[in-house]
Length: 601
Image 1 (tube, helix red, strand yellow):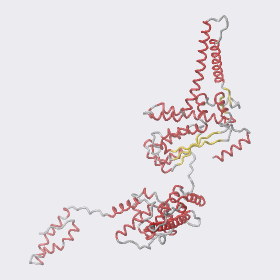
Image 2 (cartoon, rainbow, N blue to C red; image 1 turned 120 degrees about the vertical axis):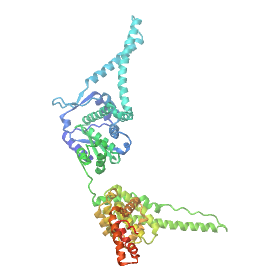
Image 3 (spheres, helix red, strand yellow; image 1 turned 120 degrees about the horizontal axis):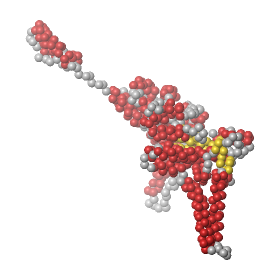
Image 4 (cartoon, rainbow, N blue to C red; image 1 turned 180 degrees about the horizontal axis):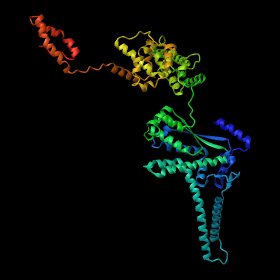
């Protein structure tokens, strides 16, 4: 935008040869003169001007998230930003003596007209003041012969009246300018907001509207004075971290400020559209208006611009900058000054001290060696992130915050890994940084694989140490699919599933042994996700008890058994003991099919 403004300024100078008037330095008294004695006129030449100047004002919604009216904070930030850019005195003078720019009468090309009323009023006040001072001087000075005491008193009265009236008028103007100089628009709006029940006052919105209109007229005056267009650019950030009702208030304030077709405001919303749409849909005051948050945003935003995907060079440059910001951690241990060993004088009883000094020196040398090795490993691991010959940068997200999170986590992981494994053995620095990227990009899927490994180990059927994590994930992916509803919020944290498959399947095939070794050094993986998965998995493994069946269905079976069992016993077993054994033999089957055992005689 600044380059566009510079280019337009150069083109306008070639067309009309009129340089813009400055508002600082020697141009400041001229600006005050124009504010008091001249009235601007909107001419055709002004409307044809193409040169523009952008005034950038940043508004962080998070700073005003605690207030009931977040949009009031937006208006106060706008007023305060313009006041600081042009100074408090010009805006105060315009608030008291300024006049709204008028439209051009006919084909007149004059942009400034003399304010005759102001000039005449000022001349009248100065004349009255001079007359009053003269009369007072005559009344108290040496009187000419022939003048009586009554004439002197009359002159004193008229002189005092003229001096008082003219002086009071000038003092009132100066007092009004001073009042606006010390009491800004921001303080006025803050006072209105601090009042009790300000939301129900009819004059509150009217007062805020007046302040905004005054600000707009002042910017229009400056446009004609500077011979260029002015556009106030408000960069609104942090809106997606506020409550839904606050978000609605800011959007309503933006729509109100942009309702005027000639409003010199440009708003840049730096937000996540998905979060903003969810806030609009959940806000109670937007029911029926923004049931679909995306449609409401489409009606509000006139130029949607989504940040494109980073290119390879851009991502490598961002990663390199993030790594360079960690130089303090890389070289802090290497450049730390060695503490001078303590010593003492000679003597026969100094053997214990010498032994202590030698032991301390040996410990210090060992610690320095460990720190140097740790710095080397950290530097090697961080270099893998922005090495264009390595494929690891492809899995880093196009987000500066995520990049810094990964860069800040790698040194801690490498130091913990070195403390655990020692100087030899264990995962390499490249594997350590790859594991950090894996935990940052796919926390849900990685937690699921680790939970499955833990459950298998507890059940006594743990896979081999050489088994790949990707194979473990494939074996349990169907079960994870059944939990998508319960783990929807956690699954939203994961990145691209296809990249996850390529990461574990091809580029970084971590094994079970490497995962167990790296897990003890992992600091960027939320372990509550695993606990939640383990609880859901344990609950889903429980089998519900079979419902009890009605005994009425077992009555016919019991009657048939009572009628046929004795006859069969008498026919086959005259002793009479067989029926009881037959009944005991059929007891388990009847329990299963009928739901309860048959009564035996």
